[in-house]
Length: 209
Image (cartoon, rainbow, N blue to C red; front, side):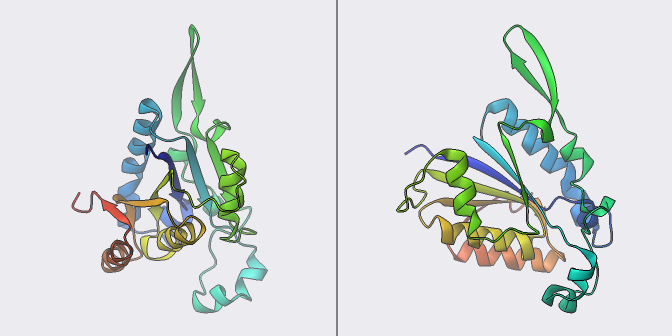
């Protein structure tokens, strides 16, 4: 069965790349993420692109469980840090339309790109998002014809969380993680998260790149 492939670009936001929680490893994957998106567009590899965004209100974050465990306010709504890295959001994609060539910014490709604001997003909502976009409202649908490919930040937090949420929502879907387009909070935790996902029958590609 040919799989419908969906690329999930996880939390490629300024605060995780160059901002308060940024790392050299996160900065290093930005060109690889850009190239993967460009290659996917040119080859029509993916039927959809999902860009997730971590979002917080400052006061709520400080009083939240996450805020107590990680007392570093980040991705605060209205700040530059919450924005998706401009090299991705503003990526110019040539679209051939009839006899004319049009260039669109990646973030403006509304027929292909889904933005998921996780401030009010529960992982069970993955089912709604995919059903809404694919027009498949079968309650018994297990995702047999889907493959989710995940890239982004951070491997050991949001990438692994989204991977397991998708596994729960669509138990028969293939889950693939492109390790070369992910970075963890540390290199050691990046590798540990990949090992965990691999042990749960998820596909890890480009691990040695």
